[in-house]
Structure formats: C-alpha cells, structure tokens
Length: 465
Image 1: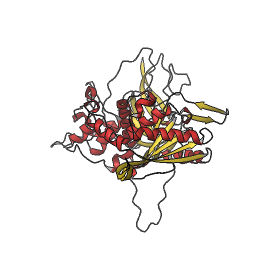
Image 2: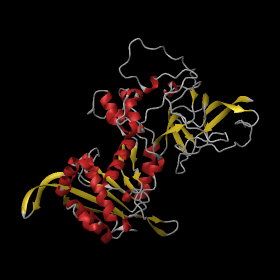
Image 3: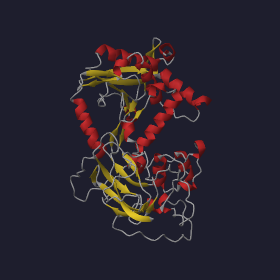
Image 4: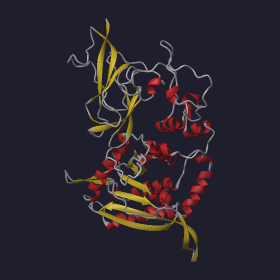
C-alpha cells in the first residue's frame, strides 16, 4: 500500500573532506515537484560552485536554509514529500536504516530505494528551475504571452501537464548553460552544432545574432554583481569566504612552508609563434583552439620526462619524497571568486589536440565557476599564464603539494640578436619557482633550459621525444 513520507536531504560532503558550503541559489521552491537528479540548488565550497542534484523524486515541503547561508556538512537543507511503501519503506523519522545508501557526492547521482535497477530518465526543464523563496507559496503557471518573446529564459519554459511526456533537456555543458542564462536564451530553441548535437558557446552566441559577442562581465566565473557603495561610504567590507578564503590559507601555508626559489629565462620564441600560425592554418588542427599556452604546456610535459624531480611532492608527515609517475597539469585561473588551479588529469598522455581541448574546457568551466572539486585536487605541477595580463615575469607561489610552478610571460616584439644581427623578434620570459627541499638549483635550471630550448626551436621536441 502506497503512502507519503517526508525525507530530509542533508548537505553532503562535496569532496576532499570539505566541512561546509554556502547556499548560492535555490533552483526550486516550496511546493515544486522535482524529479530524481534534477538540479535543486547551487552551492559554493571552498574550491568551486557546484550544482546539487535532488536525491529524491517528490514535492519540496521545506527549504531549511536561505541563499547566502554557510551550512555545515550533514545539516538538513531541504525536505521532500515522496511516495513510499507502507510494507517495505522506512520513513526518514522511523529510525530504520534505509534499504540503500543515500548519495554523498555531488555528480554521482542518487540511488533510489527500490530493489531493481532504475531506468534512465530524461533530464527536463521545469518552472521549478527558477529560484524561489522558501516561505513563498508556489505561484500558478502564467498564461501564454500574447506576443512571443524573442528569447525566453530557461526558467520560463512551462512544466508539461501531468501525464504528458517531459521534454528532454538539451545537451550542453555547465559553462554553456550559464552563458545561455546570462543572455536570456532558451537552450530548447538552439540547434547544437557540436558532436551528437551538443550545444556550444558559439551556438548560443549565434542564436542571439552575435557570433563575436564579447564576454559579458556577469558571464565571468558566475560572479555575483558587486554592490555599489552607498553615498558617502568610505569603506566597503566583504566577508572572506569560499574560494578566496581557501586560496588565501593555501598560499600562506605554501609560502611559509616550502622554501621557494625563482629563476628567470628570457628567450626568442619566434619559431614557436610561427609554428602556432602554421598549426592554426592546418586542416588537421581545424576547430581546435591553439594558443601559446598550449605549446608551452606541451613543452613542459616533454621536459618533465628528463627532469622528474620537478613532478613530485614533499611528504612531511612520513618524511618521504613522493615521485609522481604521471602528470596532472594544473592551470592557474583568476576568477572574481578567487584564484583556482584546476588540473588536467594524465596530461602527459595527451596528444596536442587532446591537450588543446582539455585546456579549452578547463578555462571555460573555471570562468563559469563550475569546476568540480575533484578537478581542483591532485595536481602535480602547475602553469600560470600571467602574459594574458600583459605581465612579463613574476615570482609565482607554489600550489600546495607541488614541487614547481611555471609563470608564462607576455610575448613581445623586441630587439634581439639573431644571426649576428639585431632585429625585431618575438620574446617571452619564463619564471620558474620550485621547492628547494625537492629540487636543487641545477635541476631547476636544466628543466627551465630544456623548456626554453623547446620553445626556441620546436624541432627539439623530436630529439627529446
């Protein structure tokens, strides 16, 4: 016999042992009907903003926390009314152990309490996707507009009537969905040109008539709008929390734990820039976003084969040096939420095209603030591209747990000695910081020299392969 029961969903551990998260926005309101794994909220951890899927299919009966509230892991955040079985189900308040575990990590989905294997369900758009205050009663669905809007937002898509098949959610990535939301574009109306109909950023921009549309400020990293200071206010105070709080603690710990040494190398990268131009014109690389960072990253990965000591970490607790036999390449990304260093797993096994794709996806996801916690941990060596800000050199701080970080400066046309003559060449400065407990000066210098040799003469890659 079927009956209803109340189920509480407690804030899960979103990975890496994080103890708290901030509720950024609710995507549902009290009274809304949700489906299994439907996105119900955005929460910000100390590392990233992640989407929280519903572990139940049912009706939202209460939202226990308001947006902007920092919640400890394990505290109830939302309650659902769900259908149960009087004979075999166990209510949330009965004290009986559930038949199957509830999900603990975002992204792994929910495990229903039935004994059979669940059938795949299409992800759907719902009017519940619009944020709603917990105390507000659900508003009735608005009547159809008399004149069609040019581009309704995803939240304006109507809920299918009861019993009607739900529309399948258009295939897209989190950064693309964020862009569509910022531009007021309904993804259901956009035709995807990517693989298997995947909707890309270009598809969204072309839909609004702007294939070259500049990135809007609110598109960057899912940034919250800055609050304008009140008239006459001489100071503005912002609480230190989330990504910025985590980054600050990590950088202080790194700076005062690992003995940093920084070395600089200025070199002629004209051959690399010429190679980059040829690759962009090549049919084999058509559709790939190739940048100087792509080739610098490849040079670092090749040089590490001869200098593995830079791909290691110092284990203070066990008094051991841990040598990594793989490379998870971190790329520092500056966002309004703070500095993040997502990494590309097993980058050393990737071809140039695979590395290019991974760098593009990493950058877009970081800008949208949707980097998964798992992608922010486990790095083995990092690169920070300060050249995009017009900076030539710097002294980067090590990402905690890594032995080295390379800062890539701007490419500038400068007078340079070339074949016994002074001429304008394209010049770059590399800045390498390393942990002197792990890396001796000679090892760091030879690694930097090899990276420079590859960028000065890309043909050296054949000799060093």
